[in-house]
Amino acid sequence: MIYNDTIVALATPSGSGAIAIIRLSGKNAITIADDNFKSVTPKKSLKNQKTHTIHLGHIVDGKRTLDEVLVSIFKNPNSYTGEDVVEISCHGSSYVQQEIIQLFLRCGCRMANAGEFTLRAFLNGKLDLSQAEAVADLISSDNEASHQIAMQQMRGGFSSEIAKLREELLNFASLIELELDFAEEDVEFADRTQFKELIERITFVLKRLIDSFAVGNVIKNGIPVAIVGEPNVGKSTLLNALLNEDRAIVSEIAGTTRDTIEDEISIGGIGFRFIDTAGIRETEDVVESIGIKKTFEKIEQSQVTIYLFDAQKNIASLEDVRIEIEKIRNKHPQKPLLVIANKIDTLTDIQLAEINKIIADVLLLSAKTGFGVEHLTNSILNLINTGALRNNETIVTNTRHYDALLKASEEIQKVQNGLETGLSGDLLAIDIRQALYHFGEITGEITNDDLLGNIFANFCIGK
Ligand SMILES: Nc1nc2c(ncn2[C@@H]2O[C@H](COP(=O)(O)OP(=O)(O)OP(=O)(O)O)[C@@H](O)[C@H]2O)c(=O)[nH]1
Ligand SMILES: [Mg+2]
Image 1: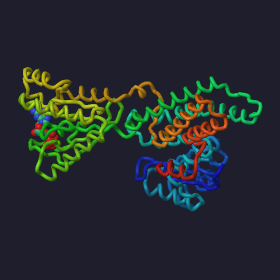
Image 2: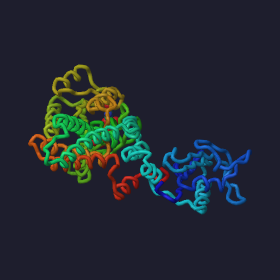
Image 3: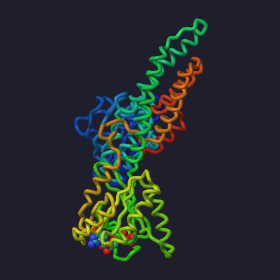
Image 4: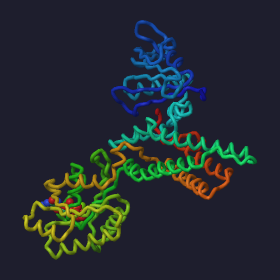
């Protein structure tokens, strides 16, 4: 055990609730809790209780009873932190919570820093760094996809994949370094063909992990979808229909939306952030033209663009729409674009056929009645490559991991080049060590205080 002090913190959100949980971890956790605990009959001391047991009693401050509580005991090393841990479930009054925490502070506990319980768990080898980071991701996950990725990472799916590669590579590094000791004899302990195969396999896995970041990153942050189009075509009405609430102001006056409005919903378990923008058109109005500039910025920043036009337009105007769509496509050829004819509730079948003739791949919709909205959400979902997610493959969501993978991949590339050009063992060994270093950064074999400080500072207190 690394720490001598015992920490305390509220593990549940601050404020009042049905119950609250106060957590203690460290050498004196059980003693401190016991000193302030009076069991409901039979009399018992917490110190003599088995690990993973729960006890009903009162927290007392001298003669004063603070609350009736349940105390859970976890003895080291079988606890979250690997130290002795006590969790006190008390009534969820802010006053009670604070009184109990103050009492423990007076009895020798220290207030825990953000993420300190998980930091201790990491330092005691209960989980590796990427698993610890997944704990934070899990706590902040708010849709099925980000939850699934965090759970997988917390269970160690990602770490074990990296650790396996690291071990195999380490094996070869040792063999090559051994060769250096026998330089005069000119022996080869490390079978170069097998080594090449391993490097190819590592390259393949690294590429898959690196590529997965494109999906992982958007899933974690929500996929931004910009809704654009001329004024009054029904963009805000569509946003409201998607969100199922009156989020944006809708009116028959062109130029109603002047700034951008955003909100997030989950479709098929993935978080999407819809962005309603000001209508695109030539304008003299300064405020509105600022809004329009923002619209273009929003298209840039979005993953998907929805272009909306008014289906009631005459044929000549539909030609203009077609040209406008071409322009957006040419400007952002890589970006998925969904073209929607809105207000089709007012149209005849003949008019609909006309639209289909002029505008290719158009989605017919009525934001007002809701017709076509489900079709639209399905189309959006189809644009996002969720294959990796469906197949439960490892997905990288963490920028720190992504950076380390990129660096590892560079070093592996050097090793591969070295093998092809018959680079000498000592130089090869240096590149392999570098790659190993970056693998170690992900799982935490290689860390420094700054890195740990940064990671755990993002946790909440009590975790
Ligand atoms: N009939 C019909 N009217 C609609 C439909 N969708 C929107 N409207 C009407 O069109 C008008 C403009 O709707 P908004 O949602 O404010 O349009 P907008 O594109 O956000 O407009 P700006 O914010 O000004 O750019 C309102 O009067 C809506 O009620 C639809 O599907 N059918
Ligand atoms: Mg609007």
